[in-house]
Amino acid sequence: MSVTAPQTTEELAKESQLDYIRHSRNVVHRHSPAVQRLFDLITSYVSYAKDQSELGSKVVWTGAAWAMPLVYASNIIPLGFSEMGRISGGEAVTIAEDYYQMPQETCSMVKASIGQWHLLAGQNTRITRIFSSSSMCDPFNLSWELLKKEGYDVFTTDVVYRANGMDEKLLEDTVQYFIAEINNAVRWFNDGKPLDEDRAREEIKRVNSIYRNIRRIVELRVDRPFYIRSLPILYLMNGMFHFFGRVKEYEQIVLDLVAELERTEVNEDDKKKAIPIFWSGGVGQEFGIFDTIDNANGALLGFLASSADREYDEDLPPVEAVARYLLTKAKAGATANTRSFMEQSIEQVRARGLILQGYLGCSFGSVARELNREYFHKKGLPSISLEGSFQVGPPSGQILTRIKAFIEMLS
Figure 1 (cartoon, rainbow, N blue to C red):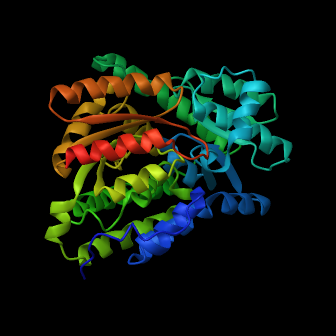
Figure 2: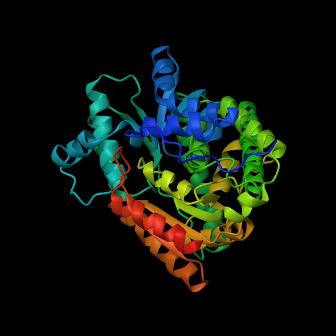
Figure 3: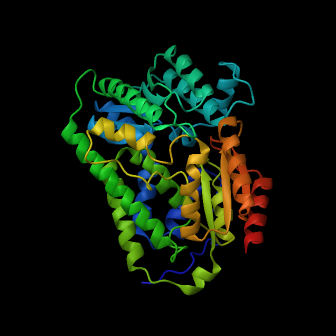
């Protein structure tokens, strides 16, 4: 089986995010049943979580990807913070600015999220539990306190951060402190009941298996750059933060993608045509960006957002394994700790350029983007820094023009 570059110029009307998904599912990726099922998983995620909540299942909003084995072991359906972007819009941002008096320059992710949670509270939603970490950013920390007043049950682990140059003793003290914090979270997950450790070990093994297969997908795409294009591969990576609430289904899609790629013959013309790109940052709702990358023969092959380059230690007790997964791997904490992972991936996929994406108003992310831009510029790797909105909305023509010019420069 050989798949050449999909005909992304074949147009459907694309006026909304759902239109872009339909186009990618039904036109660009009509050759891939696994990608089509991935899009089905994505588009049904929020409605599935709501339906399961109505049926009595525990559903919790969460932004802590590291905790997923414990979340699933506690029979919780995680509803990722990232989904706030796909269901929120200008009304949510206005509520954040007018009702909560957040300054206009506040990060669009924070404003869209708190505004949308406010709207959901007014709809008497059953999904009223939120789990996060206070290490996300200060505006989000403020949001948790405001949302408690709206009737939400919010639990956050205390700030745990691996600073650059932390010595071994302080690191071990931090790990032990974080273990205690996670144990508190587990009691909150299970309404005071103990964790099912056997189930947690099973979930850790499942997640590690998923991560190994994600790494296999990254490896196979180097020689098959156009089999999976920008929108689905970014959402496949984003899915590792929550597995779209259905970890078994996500795991099977990953396995099927590996099988599809392994069956696909390498097309040398596609390899010559493709412009390998490394993507660092989140995924906004400005889907026109991804179309522009694809139409310019850009191939997003490397990613920083992925946690698949590290695994949980299956020989440790589950809570300790989770704590050490986050804190003792070199990727944790300071921006400088991520560099080795970025460099390894950039070398693996032979990236010619670097896209540094962030959300408008996110000072937390803008500092990291500038540090990485300067570091890789000195190494001769061109980059482009993008700031977009977290919530639904079209990208500006200026952003699309910049991306197109950047990729044409790389070619």
